[in-house]
Image 1 (cartoon, rainbow, N blue to C red):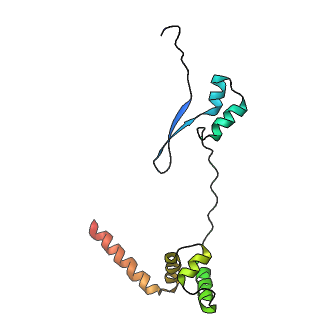
Image 2 (image 1 turned 120 degrees about the vertical axis):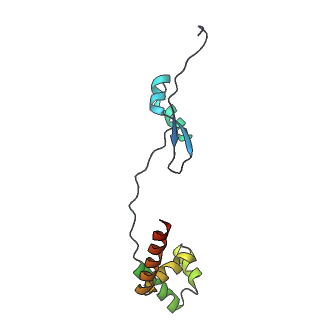
Image 3 (image 1 turned 45 degrees about the horizontal axis):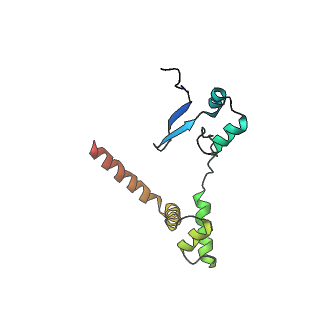
Length: 128
């Protein structure tokens, strides 16, 4: 290297997101150290999206009580509050297919589930 060249070490991270996408980030804490930047400068850099993303804690999943949902859906249909399953879906911010699935899951006789499970297991055993 000749005396006029500048060598700069920038702490760049190459990360994979959970869905397989590539993400390039700058470690702002180390950048502050290397370039002697103020915290407001590195905060501004992080705000642009180049800083290391902050991982938020996962919110706990709420358990779905399908029996209660079915009773509510059937009450909406019986009282006329909802005209059909699509209307229920719009009111509850879910799809019509989800409403149908929930209703079928609870109202389908248990013997049908046992036959379906036996059929699935038989197909799996045939595959090897």
